[in-house]
Length: 325
Image 1 (cartoon, one colour):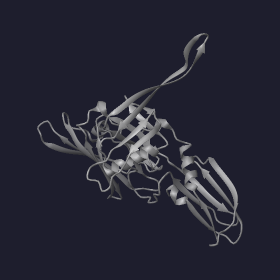
Image 2 (spheres, helix red, strand yellow):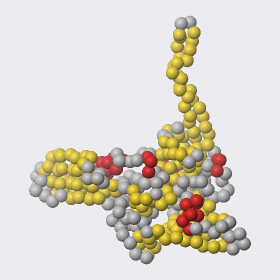
Image 3 (tube, one colour):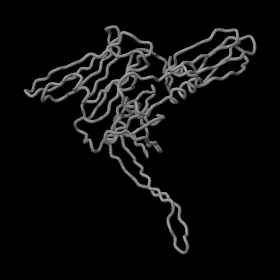
Image 4 (tube, one colour):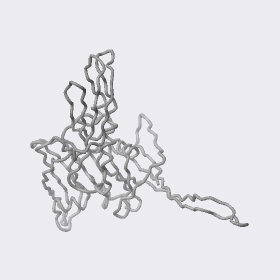
């Protein structure tokens, strides 16, 4: 289950009971244990609330930044156990989630189903595999050949369902390699299609953005609401500001600057966003781990301010600006 499902655990009781709550990581190591006495309410039940915060904190405690752009299996869960004296123990495999999302099914762990991707943009895509089997991923790409004709190439991948998520890298270079792009061809668009027992379960379409100059694009990689890496690109202007922090005082008879520190601050504008992209940007604003992708490297950032407003009804796309350092 996703962690919000654990926010209201109900235990029938005729009197005071002692409830033991235990959270273990994927290696079986106990990271949290608490024993408390509870009294039932007027409905004859003891209600244990807000366990999702404990689950999410336990998952983040094992986070490794070096795996942000790594393909393969990924864990984003823990084992939650709730037990009361003289009663059965309830145990669950609880997945990270910071919104009220409870539907566990074969799907891509993202809110965007139609994406615009640029050359050189990182694009990790995660498949929910916890408790799943019989999953198949088909990577398909359309190419324009040198003679002007169009060809469709595809490849099939069997996701490893041994952990919670299976991460594939869906950047343009990786798609060309996976689908064996014809020599001299131009990539037009591509799709990732997820099948469960040979029935389509989910699909993402990637359109190639050949209008935005790479020099004006800012790529942000962050943990989304599923606790897996995702990338959004801001195509608007980026304003860079420098700020000097220091102390001033007298050294002898001279007025000098002490402990000078020059800090860099950016204000990035998203450009026009679809409703799906806007929800992804909201995830970026709330993410516990956010990075900017610069020259092939990830650099940790902190978002310090947000400039966002929504006008309804709206007859034009919306945009967002964030300040980060």
